[in-house]
Amino acid sequence: MDSVDFGKTAADYAQHRQGFPDETFARLAAHDVGISGQRVLDVGRDRNVGARLCATRLHGDRA
Figure 1: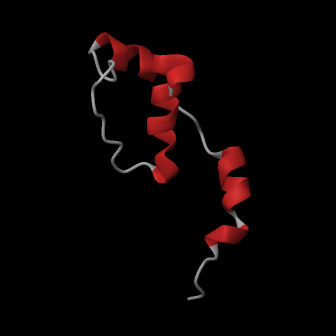
Figure 2: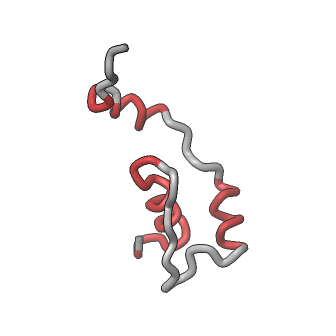
Figure 3: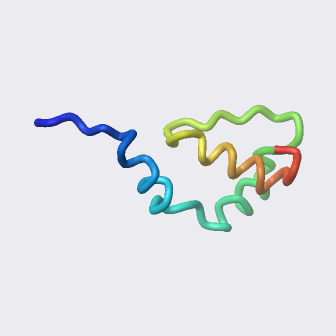
């Protein structure tokens, strides 16, 4: 089996990957996840997309 060169498909992946539903961030906030001063570990997600979106959605321009 040939190996896959992800570098050649990364742009397509970023363009077509599904994001997170708005409800995701509302539920996190409702459970006080991501409050100021809290450390949150993004495990199992690619390229820290979840962590960056969470920081932006919950903290706006302070992300």
